[in-house]
Structure formats: structure tokens, C-alpha cells
Amino acid sequence: MGAEARRLAQQLRAALRLEEPLVVQELLHRGADPNLVLADGAAAVHLAARARSPRALQCLQALLRRGADPNARSAEALTPLHVAAAWGCRQGLEILLTQGGDSTLQDQDGLQPLDWALQQGHQDCASILQELDTPAWTPEETPEPTSEWSLCGLGTLTSIMDPGLPGLNVFLGIAAKDRHSETLARCQDFSSDGSFVTAVEVSAAEDSALEGATFLTHWDSTMATLWLTEDETSILCDQDSDPSNLHQSVPIMSDLELLQALQALGHSPGPVTSFTRPHYLRLLQKAQTGPEFVGHSPELVKALRTGQIPDCQADEDVLAQEFEHPDPTKKWREGVVKSSFTYLLLDPRETKDLPARAFSLTLAECLQTFVRAVFYVGKGTRARPDSHLWEALSYHKHPRKQACPKVHKIRDIWDNGRGVISLHCFQHVVAVEAYTREACLLDALGIQTLTNQKQGHYYGVVAGWPPTRRRCLGVHLLHRALLIFLAEGERELRPQDIQARG
Image (tube, rainbow, N blue to C red):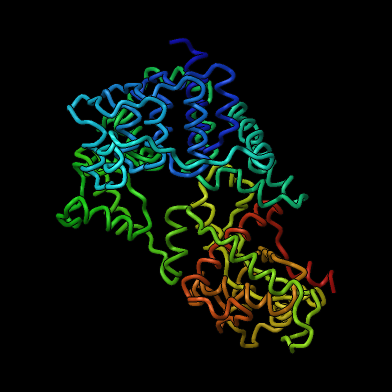
């Protein structure tokens, strides 16, 4: 196995984790071998078999079009069909079968893909494998890459090919100047389990280390590669992840109870096997004894734990469209002039220049830092963009005046020689739209975690939505605010800055 072949294979696996079909196609064009089994015992086609999202399915199809073997064997004789069946990836399983996958092949333990599907409770996959003698079916179509994705693919390709480039900040900087900012920002690996650190970690500089490394001291490396997500595998590398160190507080439970307990905490575990069960027990213990996100909504807690953001773009579009042309015959709060926005106040002692270091963090880590820093959400106008800071300034000059929690927080930041970060989002809207967005954010964050003293107000169609739907939209808006913050950078406002604007 040559160094160049290993380098391309590692880059191909990084592109699969990023779910970038155009990058995958480019690497295949450059000669990356999807069937090459690396030192950890698996090939790229095995990792691709876990595909669930449309982009990941496109990656799998790209591999198969360029010679990936649906019957390739891992070090444990697992085929891509075994992996897809064990993870419950129905569409991936169908694609592999239509491309010649052999469902009768056995792994080193004598198990066929059907055995794995039944063992893990994936009845939809088991039904497909049990009915192979019926007329052939056609898997659901997945969309071809669009020009929008082409931009994303080039950016990710640059990050994978040249680890020295600050891909995230560069692209978010471009996004801030472009109407496609959200599209570009979504391409910075905020939709996958990995991070740009992963792309750097599998660069050519590490090929020599990869070949001779002992990947997991207490665990079988091939099983970790195929059965655990990248984040879970990294946890195994910690010394404390030795299953012999499991705390006695973890109760005895069945495989199903273990899965349900992890899912309730926002995790998305894969198959429970004799290999993964000790790890998942450890993960459960860590989740139960780790830092709690007290006060936040369940929807936000899940996003903070997993980095999975609710897909509420359609709901936001409904919200925006309703107030795009407000009915002039109705009496709207504060009129219909589009001069309002939503703002968030952040503590720089918590953010610690997050935009400058976001490229090395996962989305969950970025979101956790961002949420910890937010201490107030409000609605502002162009006429009074810094009214909240002017209020604090008046108290700053008269320290004996009794201040509200928001002002007290601002004064505390100023007294520490720092400035307040005032992030303006969703600008140029009518007041009722800004109030509705504010209410969604407040419900998602949980008012008890903020210095706000009253709940927000909903207007229009959103007022009739169930609380869960509104909180999901709040998490979506919070994620958008995070992307704006990462794009614009961190700027602090001190008392002298407010006075200078006076």
C-alpha cells in the first residue's frame, strides 16, 4: 500500500464524514480507492454504507459508480450490506443490493446482513432482506448535486486538501457579504458528526502515524470504525473510557433500555453489540453525570448534546411571508414600518473569541459556548439600536441605583474591563415579526437562564402553533444567530464606545 494511496483513501473518508458528494467525486477522479482497507480494518465503502441523509446517499452512489465493491470485506469479513443492515440504513441497503450486494455473505462470526438487521431491531431492513425473491424494487431517488452545493464542495475540498487554510472563517467571511450566506455557512460541516479538525487530522502528514499506530488501547479498531460515530470513537481514546472503569451507578438494563436511555438524552446510538455495549454504558454514565443544561428547553438540550439542529426553515419562511406584506387595515403593534430587529447580548468572558476558534470545534461545542454567553434577548429598532446599553450606562455613572438583572450583568462585564457583545439579527422587519422571533428564542433558551424578566409575545400564525413547534423554530433561529456571529466576528462595546455614539 503506497503512501499516496493511503493519503487519498484517508481524504476520501474525511469527505464521507463531511457528507460532501462533490468532494468525494473529485477524490475518486484523483484515484482514491473506495475499496482500500486501511490500518483500522475498514474501507471507505464500509463507512459510506451508514448513509442516511440525501447527501450521504449521494456519496455512496458516487463510490459505487466509480468501482466501489458492495461486497468488499473488512478485517472482520463485514460487507457494506452488514453495516447498512446493522445501522438500519434502508435506502443505503437498497442501493447496495441493486448494485450487486450479496446478502448471503457471512462475517467472521457466521452472521449475514439479515441477522444483523433482526438483532438490532431494524424491521424495515429485515423485510427487504427477507423478500429478495420478490420483483425488484427501485430505491428512492436522491437529488444530484446543485450549483449551490458546488460552492460548498469546493470550500470543503480546499479544507481537506490543505489543512493550513482556515476554511470555516474564510467561507463565513464570504457568506457575510453574500445573500447566500446561510447556504455557504451550512457547508462548513455544521450538518455532520465531524468537524474541520477531522479533515486536518487525516491529512497526509499523519499517514505515517496511521500505519503503525495502535488505534484503541482497549478496543478493536475495525469495530470502532464501523459501529461508532467519529465523536464516540474519540471518547474511546480517553483513558477513562476503559469499560472496566464503569461506575456502579449505571443500572443493569437490556439493550433496548440502553438505546432508549441514550436517545432520551439526545444521542443517536448505533447497533448494540458485545463490543459497543460497554461503551454505550460508559456514554450513558458520562451523560448522566456530566454538565446539565438546566433551564433550557428539551429541543435546545438535544441540539446542545448532539449538534443536530431542527429543520425549521419552512416554518421561518411562513413567519417571514406573513409579515412581508402586513394587512394595512389591521392595527399592528408599533405599526408596519420595517425598522425592527432582534438582538442578543453576549458575555465575552464566555465566548472567548469564539469566531476565531470555531474551525477547531464541533457544532455542538460552538452552540454550547454561544448559549452560555447569551444573557439577554430583545427587540430593537434602528432609531434606538443601543437603548439597552444606554440604560446600563446611566446606572454605571450612579452605582448606588438599583438595577435590573440585565443592567447588573452589563455593569459586571464593564467592571471587569470587558465590553458587551450586542448581536443584531433578522433586521429590517416589522415590530410584530421581531417580537415573534424574540419569543421563539426566549422559549428555546428558557427565560430562567437569561436576565429577561418576562416572556415574549407571539403574533400571526405562529401564535397558534404548539409550544414544541415554536421552541424548535427558536432553536433554528438560535443556530442562525450563531452563524451570523461567527461570520461577523466578536466586537465588544464598552462605556466609552456608547458615549462616542451619543
